[in-house]
Image (cartoon, rainbow, N blue to C red; front, side, top):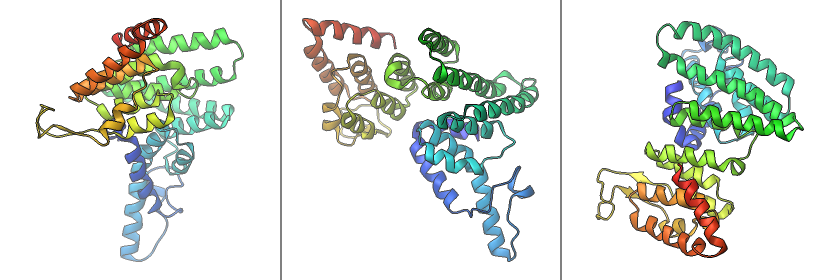
Length: 326
């Protein structure tokens, strides 16, 4: 399930919608208890076909709930996350983690710490079983353990009045991030926790590096949505995020049979955040990677025209430096 979640993390909205449909098809009487649905959570029914359908729906709900919860968490759709929580197995690390996340969101810090402690105990048992097999198999659990630790730090960040202490926490998060594998899904999981304490706009440098990492891994849709989330103009952000790109087979975008198709390209380019040089520069690099070379060059020219002289030069050079470090 973890591999399925990570492979589709750049399309979380679609995953959440699909999961919600499956959950709605299952009656409220299923998936309330602990353990596999075949063990103790399926409702007692009579009638062959009805019973089989209910069992199938319950099994689907049990399997898809972690995916739906992860999607809702990454999208910060807290009401949707709350709907998935009762369907999660209470004896799993994932369930305890998502319960802890929701408790932090609602301000129930005591309850969050309780779930974090329970998740650690479950993770310890799982790690002992996996670490002997391979580090690669255990790495996902290690990332979850780091999320648990940082969730506790998020609680401290949200309740601490000492600005210096909060900055130290943020600096330690950045240092840990650079020590992690340069893996899109790992970065996404860790950044999702930190976003509960520090808004993306206040931590734009790290999010731009994440967008760059997604772009280099050809996760263009994810990179586009991250960049859009950093755009101050809400309308422009929507335009950029919704101008999704679809990959076909060829590699020459100037050809009639371009490998990419776009939606509302003109508005997409017009929405570029010229007043945010670092974000605009990252966006230009994304356009280039999507084989939209003319659009990328046009955006860079507009960026130079906007910030090329006088007081704007400082903003332009700062944006270029930030983009060059991606």
